[in-house]
Length: 495
Image 1 (cartoon, rainbow, N blue to C red):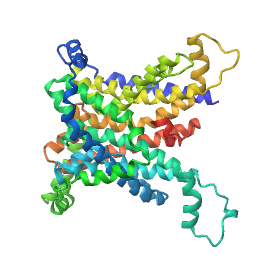
Image 2 (image 1 turned 90 degrees about the vertical axis):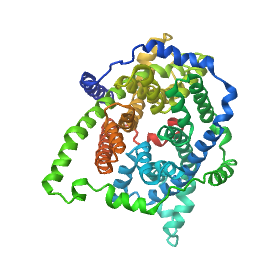
Image 3 (image 1 turned 135 degrees about the horizontal axis):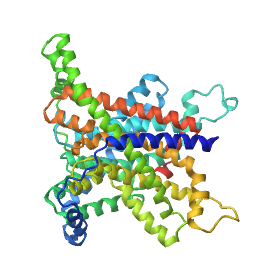
């Protein structure tokens, strides 16, 4: 029964993929993409290690912003988790985390300017909502202490502090560590909107064609991620956090008047501000809906669904690279390095790179989204396949072993991870519009450039609603397939 359900869902999504692929724009618009690729990869030979000290401040800024942001997010997230059972809290957090941190950064740039406060708020708001949701799910998993063994004199607070929390704490810390890695990636990407993190210099080097510097910056970033478990430990974390608070001192942009103006004037629809009639307000919204919201939603859905299936294909093809069922241990190490690099590079940076090579279309965006998310799922599947115990009479032929033994046994987990990443791909598809692809992010970025913040809010509401809808459908599909809906909480898998 389960296998037939898996097949039905797979065929349904393949059908949607074919329909969306028909409307997708896969054009290559650069004059000589082969030459651009040669120039980029040739940049490896132009790396100048002596330039590393130039980026020291950017490295420190990236780490410090991520440190402070995840610390604040963890505190707020834990507080939200305690009240997550309230419908209003769940809906508010769902809306908040559905908006990408780059969108939050673009909004706060209009209010507070280009400074540390903007960077922190852009990460804290969506991350605290995400942590609140996941913390709540983790705490529910550890709500197993028998009520008959609880003292009647013990308060709910005491029971929580001395029974549930100690058991859940390792899992909470593990997930927070994973989110810190995500925060490092997000902080780096914020450099593309002008904040002085690693992404700021990466963007500048890309624009000038200094590919040697691009590779140097990417290697620095990979080293930060790969060595994370060595420099960020339970002993070093308090000192790093204290240093980060003292290091980040650029909060000069905070102005309560700007915030009040934003909330009471800038985001109010312009016809209402100008005291125009209801019909004129309707015409204003209808124009935005027909010319920006609908095309943006359709392009976002097309890009998401095509990327989802290509992600699945890359995951299925890549997991044998690190599985000892198919390759030797030395080869598995090489495959693991490749997947670590791909999953450590944010989709936005990959898309930006491919856009320089192939030009603006959905093609570079699909490749970027699929490589990043496919590497994450492939990494998980590879490790799961290593844990499988094969029958004594299992075939020795690799193709048959892959097709008839390993894949069928881990396919359910594969679908669970794929549908979890579905919402993430949707969020990234929207934000990639900033790079010139006509998703919702394209129209949001254009509205911000025109200082039309009232339009920005309308577009963001539809962007968040689309993400919430995808998350809802994903949960329904996982429940239909009876897949583990809490699998994303296992940080050992998602890292």
